[in-house]
Image (cartoon, rainbow, N blue to C red; front, side, top):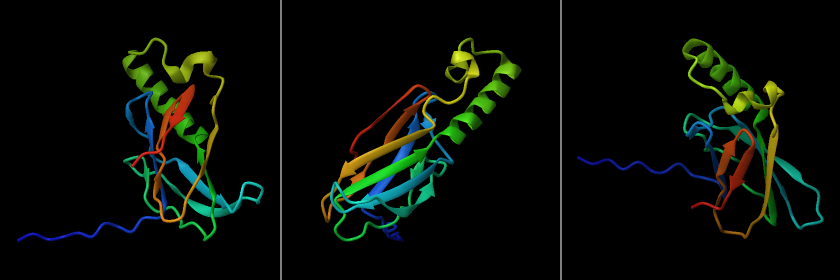
Length: 144
């Protein structure tokens, strides 16, 4: 007997984060969504989500009619601080890392505390925008 499971409805914008420094999804990152209707319009905050164990935000809000631009704000500072604390604990236990990225620059803090991605949208399209994150760099692309 086969059962079908309906896919959860998804909004027009989705994202996930991969921490390329450790090769794993970034869990627990707060993501905020904002939209505007036209490049000179004010940004309208729509809400947000937090990445799950797979690094995905599965419940971002829908976009209002007339949206032409979307902004995703990723709050990565707390994630990196938590990762650095975990890495420091593991280093002390195993003493296996010589120059861990989180410890470069004398542990002076997080280089990118936030990542803001702005992109244009068309009605009826779905936009999956993954963030590839590392302590000293990031990249994004339009996924599928």
